[in-house]
Image (cartoon, rainbow, N blue to C red; front, top):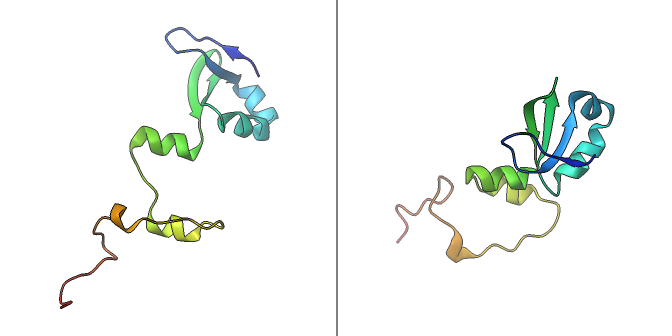
Length: 93
C-alpha cells in the first residue's frame, strides 16, 4: 500500500476494493496509524479508520461500560465525571 493522492483528497493511504478484499488484515493494520481510503472503479467509496480516530472525529467519548470492559486497568479521575444515568444523587443526605 502506498500513499496516493485522489483529486480533492489530501494524500493518504489508498486501496482499491480488490486490494482491500485480498488483505483485510493489512488494511486494518494501516488504519491504526491513519485513515485508509478505499476506492471502487477509481472512485472513493469508503474510509477505514481506527475507532479512536472515529471518536475524535465525531466527538464521541467512551461510555462507562466500555471503560469497565477494558482488559487493562484504567485510571478514572472523579473530577472528570459528569452526572449521568448511573449517577443518582437524589435523596442522599
